[in-house]
Amino acid sequence: MNSDTDIGLRTSNIELKTHEIPTKTVTPNSGPSWYIKWIASIFVVVGLFLNTHEFFPLAWLVQSIGLFGWFIVAFLWNDRALMIINVVGLTLLINGFLVQYFNI
Image (cartoon, rainbow, N blue to C red; front, side, top):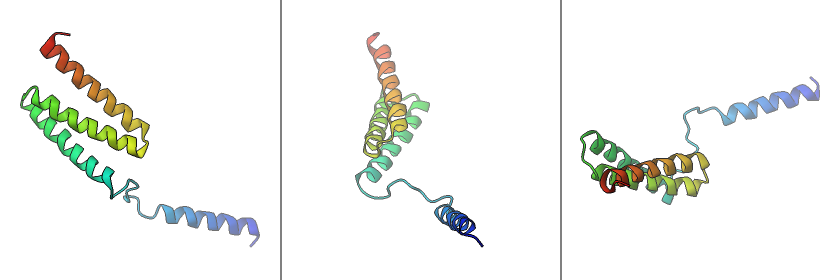
Protein backbone atom coordinates (compact mmCIF):
# COMPACT_ATOMS: atom_id res chain seq x y z
CA MET A 1 0.00 0.00 0.00
CA ASN A 2 1.16 3.48 -0.64
CA SER A 3 1.06 6.29 1.88
CA ASP A 4 -1.92 8.03 0.21
CA THR A 5 -4.09 4.95 0.76
CA ASP A 6 -2.92 4.67 4.39
CA ILE A 7 -3.82 8.30 5.05
CA GLY A 8 -7.26 7.80 3.47
CA LEU A 9 -7.96 4.73 5.62
CA ARG A 10 -6.85 6.48 8.79
CA THR A 11 -9.02 9.49 7.97
CA SER A 12 -12.07 7.29 7.39
CA ASN A 13 -11.48 5.47 10.67
CA ILE A 14 -11.25 8.77 12.55
CA GLU A 15 -14.46 10.04 10.90
CA LEU A 16 -16.23 6.77 11.72
CA LYS A 17 -15.18 6.95 15.37
CA THR A 18 -16.55 10.45 15.79
CA HIS A 19 -19.92 9.35 14.43
CA GLU A 20 -20.25 5.91 16.02
CA ILE A 21 -23.11 6.94 18.31
CA PRO A 22 -25.60 8.86 16.15
CA THR A 23 -27.89 9.75 19.09
CA LYS A 24 -25.15 11.12 21.34
CA THR A 25 -25.88 14.70 22.36
CA VAL A 26 -23.34 17.44 21.87
CA THR A 27 -25.02 20.00 24.12
CA PRO A 28 -23.68 20.50 27.64
CA ASN A 29 -25.17 18.11 30.17
CA SER A 30 -24.15 19.91 33.34
CA GLY A 31 -23.73 23.43 34.63
CA PRO A 32 -26.15 26.35 34.76
CA SER A 33 -27.29 26.10 31.14
CA TRP A 34 -28.46 22.52 31.67
CA TYR A 35 -30.73 23.53 34.57
CA ILE A 36 -31.98 26.67 32.84
CA LYS A 37 -32.88 24.80 29.64
CA TRP A 38 -34.93 22.17 31.49
CA ILE A 39 -36.71 24.66 33.72
CA ALA A 40 -37.40 26.87 30.68
CA SER A 41 -38.69 23.85 28.75
CA ILE A 42 -41.12 23.04 31.57
CA PHE A 43 -42.36 26.64 31.51
CA VAL A 44 -42.88 26.50 27.73
CA VAL A 45 -44.80 23.21 27.91
CA VAL A 46 -46.97 24.39 30.83
CA GLY A 47 -47.56 27.66 28.97
CA LEU A 48 -48.69 25.76 25.89
CA PHE A 49 -51.06 23.70 28.03
CA LEU A 50 -52.48 26.85 29.61
CA ASN A 51 -52.79 28.41 26.16
CA THR A 52 -54.83 25.51 24.79
CA HIS A 53 -57.20 25.82 27.75
CA GLU A 54 -57.45 29.60 27.32
CA PHE A 55 -55.93 30.67 30.62
CA PHE A 56 -55.03 34.14 29.45
CA PRO A 57 -52.89 36.14 30.28
CA LEU A 58 -51.29 33.53 32.57
CA ALA A 59 -50.42 31.36 29.54
CA TRP A 60 -48.54 34.21 27.90
CA LEU A 61 -46.66 35.01 31.09
CA VAL A 62 -45.59 31.41 31.63
CA GLN A 63 -44.55 30.98 27.99
CA SER A 64 -42.63 34.27 28.12
CA ILE A 65 -40.65 33.07 31.14
CA GLY A 66 -39.80 29.87 29.26
CA LEU A 67 -38.76 31.70 26.10
CA PHE A 68 -36.64 34.13 28.09
CA GLY A 69 -34.96 31.18 29.81
CA TRP A 70 -34.21 29.61 26.45
CA PHE A 71 -32.82 32.94 25.25
CA ILE A 72 -30.40 32.90 28.20
CA VAL A 73 -29.35 29.35 27.27
CA ALA A 74 -28.86 30.39 23.65
CA PHE A 75 -26.71 33.30 24.81
CA LEU A 76 -24.60 31.00 27.02
CA TRP A 77 -24.16 28.57 24.11
CA ASN A 78 -23.61 31.41 21.61
CA ASP A 79 -26.30 29.85 19.41
CA ARG A 80 -27.70 32.57 17.17
CA ALA A 81 -30.53 30.46 15.74
CA LEU A 82 -31.89 29.77 19.23
CA MET A 83 -31.49 33.43 20.14
CA ILE A 84 -33.49 34.55 17.11
CA ILE A 85 -36.35 32.07 17.52
CA ASN A 86 -36.77 32.87 21.21
CA VAL A 87 -36.54 36.65 20.80
CA VAL A 88 -39.12 36.50 17.99
CA GLY A 89 -41.43 34.29 20.09
CA LEU A 90 -41.05 36.54 23.12
CA THR A 91 -41.72 39.63 21.00
CA LEU A 92 -44.87 38.08 19.53
CA LEU A 93 -46.18 37.09 22.97
CA ILE A 94 -45.55 40.57 24.38
CA ASN A 95 -47.15 42.13 21.30
CA GLY A 96 -50.23 39.92 21.67
CA PHE A 97 -50.52 40.83 25.34
CA LEU A 98 -50.25 44.58 24.64
CA VAL A 99 -52.78 44.44 21.81
CA GLN A 100 -55.25 42.34 23.80
CA TYR A 101 -55.16 44.25 27.05
CA PHE A 102 -54.01 47.78 26.19
CA ASN A 103 -55.21 48.18 22.57
CA ILE A 104 -51.75 49.30 21.49
